[in-house]
Image 1 (cartoon, rainbow, N blue to C red):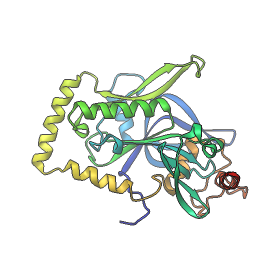
Image 2 (tube, rainbow, N blue to C red):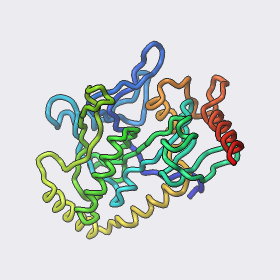
Image 3 (cartoon, rainbow, N blue to C red):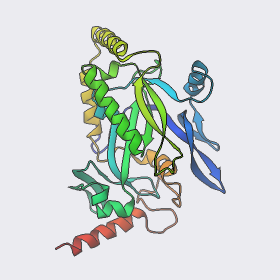
Image 4 (cartoon, rainbow, N blue to C red):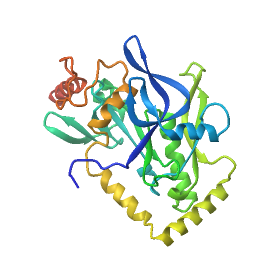
Length: 303
């Protein structure tokens, strides 16, 4: 295994609750109130829909796609949903600093340093660069590829908090059989004072429509027994994933940086994943350079 390269679950598609549209010559994200499943291929009009998108719409109730039957890959909730405080270079989409509220890994001119992480509210470096929660959820849809997953990225507090709670709760009540539970991603709406009482949407996880938690646990036990009888080693799969995630400093690599910049930082001047120096193609200083200078200044000013 190549050291320094994070090994992530194989991805065969993406899940989004919006799309990227072109307005006034710029590609901007447009929020939606339904799920969209895409492939990993883009054309001039954006991401190409995955065949499962149409299949799920035909199989479900008429209208918008607001529920997707899924399973997760791992029994460990933290392997299915990885969430950290993340500061991105808004021009390249590359992570600059990733932390968990206790420690962080920060990319600088001399490499990657491990530092304390006081969370964005208590970190001058994070406040200056717009550090925010960032989560990635991998789920299995359909039966064609049991180890191939769809990836859902989010910077929503509501989605991250809800998904984390559900995964831990389902893992607990099922006796650790999280990967065998028949689950469903659901899109929910709510209004807050910050949204000025207009609806905002977040992603939730529950048992599938028409089933109960007790029935889902019974199905999980049956699937677990069949898998064990066939020689399927779930514990080894979890451990392999754990080692893969720990093999690199940052989960998102150069191939994902354009998608991250496009989806979460539409106001950036541009992105260029092939720019190994991590600077914007305009020649102006990138956010990483500005933050590095600010960090140096804070260090020099410290007593």
